[in-house]
Length: 391
Ligand SMILES: [Zn+2]
Image (tube, protein in one colour):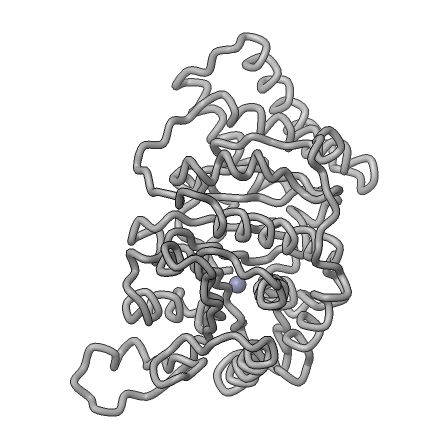
């Protein structure tokens, strides 16, 4: 996750889904014991926070995983790696610019001759902040968790007897913590024409929870720019024990590797369980992750990718985003969850007061059934308070 705090921005356009109510709550194919070893290796002391030369060790690990799963190399000359020069030298005429990182990529060819030219890209950053003043920033949640998801989705898809119709691309981005330099380089120097990409999926921090409170929530952002994905998210539901909160990306801003794809108007989804007090500290360690949650999110991504890859039509970008009362429903649900969580891990008086007031105001709007511009200004303010200041 990039340094800027995406939770500063309000929730928008969310339709909360209650896992216990969903007729289509299901068991996921990806299990905690699948994702955990990836996190434990990538966030080990040996990898020293995955920056500079230590980030290359993480890149080697991804390459080996892709090879072992018999995926095809993504880049020129049959390479799994794309060298990334320094941003300073990138535009110069220097014949041999200094290499500062590597993206790692592989792909699975689609089975349908008519659809295989269309691509679904799953890309997650594997770098982190390195070691500072002798302290290792291990980056277990940020973003060994998302990388473990990507590797397991790749492994599962590669093992299918019947390959998906569209082709699937898997990428580990380096240098996300350096202003998204890895994904920006990838989009500026793609190994295929960008208009072939029908969907980009990323995940950044999917193993903890907002404010470290016991919430079952996965925030999914960006679907408002791809109507088909919005419908598909509702259709697919979520694994038991996981609740999807759909948010609008337009109010969130660029916080992770979806940024360069968003700029190209490529439909995208961004998955995150939110910020917590250990974000960008040496305390972001593997022992603190909820591996059930990482596995459930991974299973959800797997199902979305498979369904999208096999659907008749592909997602299409839309600029038109209509805010609606579902935003209020989402905030209302978050306040309910926060109050429930507060029974297990007590809230301060101020936290309880603000959450309760927000819940009551949302309830009033929902009872009235109309949502006007002034309400929306209030909703934006209260979302910022709830998600940034209070916890
Ligand atoms: Zn980060």
